[in-house]
Length: 67
Image (tube, rainbow, N blue to C red; front, side, top):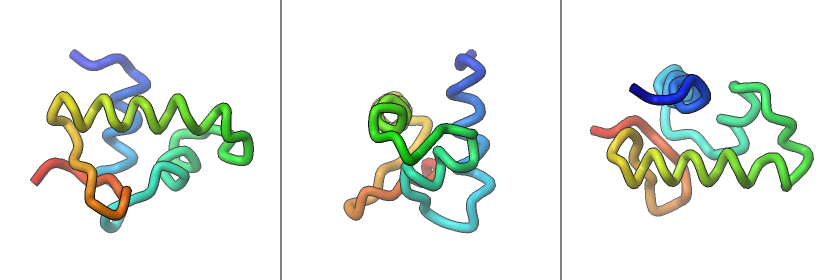
């Protein structure tokens, strides 16, 4: 079972029309994206979800659900 914040991140990525940047995920989950210090923890969670196989990171830095 994933923590609620990770579940919200995965849901936001799934609902996107296609691959999505971390900044866009932040907008969808309610992170203040204008402050880099608040965006970096989100980016870290995205990368962790990639490492665990929940998401996929494309070479251009966008995230998508695992294919």
